[in-house]
Image 1 (cartoon, rainbow, N blue to C red):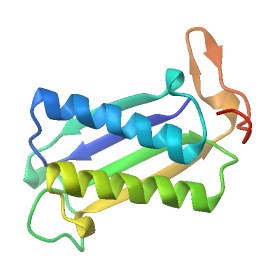
Image 2 (cartoon, helix red, strand yellow; image 1 turned 135 degrees about the vertical axis):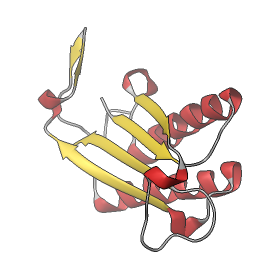
Image 3 (cartoon, one colour; image 1 turned 90 degrees about the horizontal axis):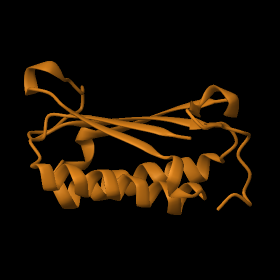
Length: 126
């Protein structure tokens, strides 16, 4: 039951935001071996003065905070992170050095919805 929160200085349209939520969901399903029904995505836009990334180049900044269930390998997390970087560069023109992905891993029971409490992740889940 991941929560993917993207903070950005980009100025996406409503259609761009919807495309992003769909892309993040699709890439999470593919790279992290799960199903889409429990993935939550938020996009939060900020003025350039409200975000900073030390190595940033000219252009928008994007930071994805991914709260995920514990258990996936570094390789899976890295693959998802790079897929996010690739998509943001291609779709929104965010320079690669201007993207950061941070993972916070939780025990399954720490992620829940109204009708479900997360369990431990298993490679057989997808």
